[in-house]
Length: 147
Image 1 (cartoon, one colour):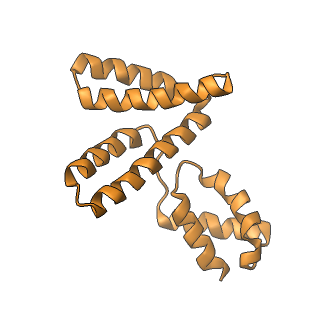
Image 2 (tube, one colour):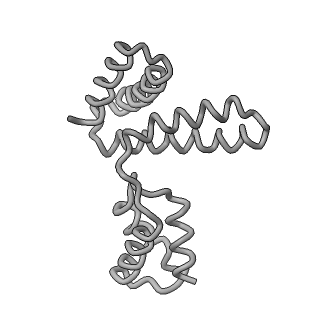
Image 3 (cartoon, helix red, strand yellow):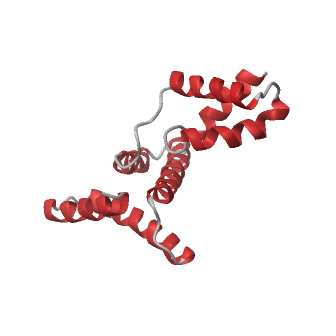
């Protein structure tokens, strides 16, 4: 079952269970997917849907930081719940140790030795961790290992 099909099934289930919060989050996700499909004039595959889910989570994390800075705990709580609903559709996230091992392996494969090689290393590394690791964390580990 593709991610889009799973979202449709979960939306139907949320309707049956009268889970209005989950239903609204799934509808937001489906709307974002549909907008991209209309723009690109094609049906998206699972990797493209994952990109959209990543973007949605990133937007919510940014909002969460701003709400917490502003002391808006009510809005922060809502955004945390939205992130939890979206995270269900994401692949299992890598641990920091697993990311570290992948970064070291990719450094050996590409022969990167300094920060000047960072672009080459990141372009080889990101497809390996796409959707399974936070880009900021990957970037930090790469900078630590190359310095």
